[in-house]
Structure formats: C-alpha cells, structure tokens
Image (tube, rainbow, N blue to C red; front, side):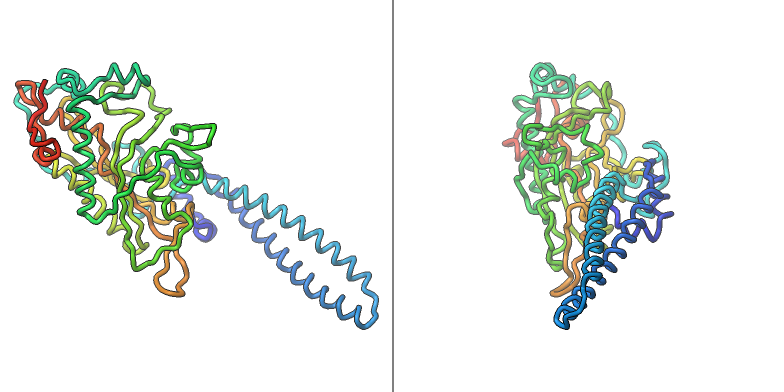
Length: 423
C-alpha cells in the first residue's frame, strides 16, 4: 500500500500516478477521512491530557477535604467523549484501510507513458529470429504427433485450460525445472519448497487481494487460496519481520504449480499451452534496500534472461507502460519468446519492482545497524521461467523437417543424453 504521508503531502503526484495506470481512486474522500482521523487524534490526546490533570486535582482536593463533585462530573463527560472518539477512530481507520488496499502502486518516474500493450517499448533483443526452412507447425500439433502432449486428456480430467504432459513431455518439463533452479542457485538464490495453499493475509500482503480475488482459486471450507505464483509464499516468508540490513539483498527461488482462474479471459488462446489454468513456474524473489532496488531489478532481469540464453531461444525484453503495469508494480519488464508456429511473441517472464508497496502491506522491514530505525524493504520478483510457453517455444523453434524436435544442449544432460524428441 502507499505511504499515507505521501498521499497527504503530494496528492497530485498520487492522482497522476493512479491515472497513468488507468485506475480510479476517490482521493478527495480519502483525504477527508485522513483529516478527520487527525482531528480525532488531536481531540482525544487533549482530552486524555485533561483527564490526567483532573485526576491529580481530584486526588489533591480529596486529601484537602475539598468538593470534587464538579470535577467528577467533568471526568464522566470526558471519559464518555473519549469512548465515542475511540469508536469513531476505529471505524475511520477500518474504512481507510479498506480503501488503501484497493489503491494501486504508483509507476516509477522512468515508466513510459501509454494506454495499452501496444505502447510498451522494446528495450532489448537477443538477436535475429532464426527462420525455419519449412512451414512451422504450432506446438499443439507437434506435441500431439510426438505423443508428449495430450490436450483431450486435460480437458476430460479438468475442463478447458488444463493439459496433460506424458512421457518425454513430462520429462522435458522436469528437466527444464531442474535447469532453471540450478541456474538460479548459481546466481545466489536460496531454493525453497513452499506450500501451494496460503491464507488470505498472505494474498493481501503481495497485492492479489482484494482486487484480483475473482481470478483466484479459493478452498472455501478452509479459506485458503491456491497460489497464483510462488511470489506469494516466498514474499510472505518475512511477513512482520525486521531483517538485518547487512544481509540484503536476500534472494529466494522456488518451483511451484500456479493456479489462475483467468476469469476475464474466456475464449482467449484456447489452443495448446499458451493460456492454461494450472502450470509450473520457477520464481525468483528479492528483498533489498530502497536505494539499490532498481539496480536489483536490472540484475533480476538478467537472471531470468540467462535461462533463455542457456536454452538458445530468441527473446526480446519490453518495458511496460503505465496502463499495462500490474496493480502492485512500480516498474516491470516482460520477457517474450518468439513462437514461429503461432506467429507471435509469447510472454514467459515478468520482472517487477514493487518498491515498498508489498512491504507496507506485509510489514517487512530492515535495520541498517544496531539501534537504527526500522525501514520498509523493497521487494522484487521475476519468473525464471513459466514452463508452458517455454515448452511451446522449444517445440516450435527446434522442430525439424522429419518431425523430430531437437533438445537444447543445456537440457541434454538432464534428459540422460537424449538429443531429440521423436515419435
């Protein structure tokens, strides 16, 4: 969430930032609540000070044998008013917190302006896209011909948007996961195995709730959510903690399944593995200091690109414009691979800096030294990578005229020396 001091002191910056994201927020209404809150706090502090003074006067007068009836009557009125104020303060604070949770993070000053994805500039390309000397097939045709992908089984088991990998397809997925985790471990990330179900507080902490609850899978009996990404459990590992500043940046990675209802995307990308409700993904999360977080974002981006370099897949990096940023992100890069069978770029990673937005929601702070005042950390996360579209791109980019698919060299050791997928 945003710093209340920022909202109060620089409302025009907040107004402009929210508008850049195409969001709506009753800023004036929030400022009125904030003003009311501060007025109530001043009043109750004055009343409590008066109550303490009168209590001393009553004690003194009683010892002197004086009349304290008027003071007792005043104390009764004061206590009643303090009780009224406390009730209104609680109600006002709850209303402000509810509003705060719906306010998006502000874009960083370097984020390009724009109103849709078409305004996202390309900032890096890995090189020219290799041209296949034949008409490429889409990955679903390749996968089903080779027997490594079974879309009908996925639909039969769970419905539209679920897939089954079998045989060498399942082995390829496992090999990719192991390669990615090994790369990130060498980059300094600590690997975790985390729960796939989390409580509501964890989802609020990283910003999925309340805004995106409709897109989440909820186990209502226990009020637990299936995670949409390992970002949620990883980031919340330090919820409520005060970290040692000398240990920053802290880096973590995990392989988990990800579950997304994608409630607003019905009818989009229904073929193959481009848009599915359950998929595996390796995630990277970093906790760092405010002054280094944007350097860390560039490092995080490089860590994700290293996986695609190892897989010899062509890719490009785009910088998201304000209107295309996620709810929690202050700045974000997307990494896309080229899909020759589909004929377009596919997003396989998003690398985001949330600044202190998630840290404020989750109470994640650090100290620069012994006795120093705790400060909010900056959190970052990036996909390293999402497997379905990477598998799709591998199948399409490495298909051969004979129908076999070449396995990227970096994966061959993970597949026991196997160099091709074939029927």
